[in-house]
Length: 226
Picture 1 (cartoon, helix red, strand yellow):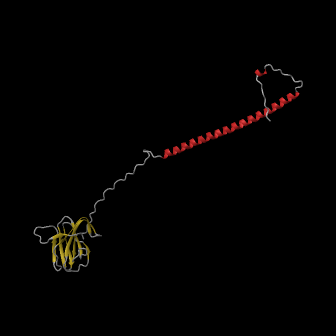
Picture 2 (cartoon, rainbow, N blue to C red; picture 1 turned 135 degrees about the vertical axis):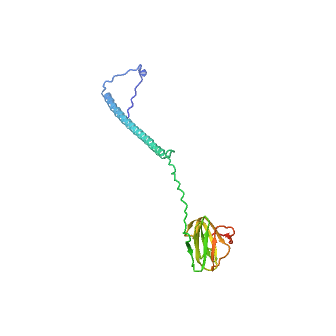
Picture 3 (tube, rainbow, N blue to C red; picture 1 turned 120 degrees about the vertical axis):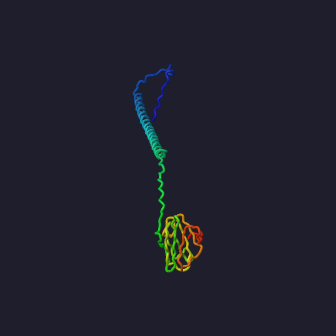
């Protein structure tokens, strides 16, 4: 129920005459009912306004809370990224690997006059060896291929040695150098290879001098490694 109350402007009331009703009881009752209705409507309007304001306030609080949470999360994300980003001061330098000292050179030797390899020294021939050089050498006695010798004898620098039991006609090969490797029957450094050009008779005793000498009657030649 809606009651419309019309209030006339004072200017419009000039010249108007009002008549006092003889019995104002119905009017009073009407005014009282209208006042009650207006009071209820005003109460409803106030309640509605309060509820709407409450919703607005709640929404405002929710928006503020959401914005605050976004700011906090954004700050945390930035902090994480900033903390994880490498800086020149935090970059690890490559470890310095110390250089290893040079290993000392080996200088292994066999015993002077030691037969370091043989394949049946059963003959009657012998060979005296005079190594007047400053390097050790290994004398190889073979009937043909120096890689398949009858025997190999080690003669140190400035030393002499004798090989016996040589069989048949043979050739004498030489290898010289430093650091003798018994496993490979060779020198590991400064190795040189040569041979006497003439063959030797196994029925005779021979003597050879390894250093060059004036008036020598035996020639030598360089040969490939064996």
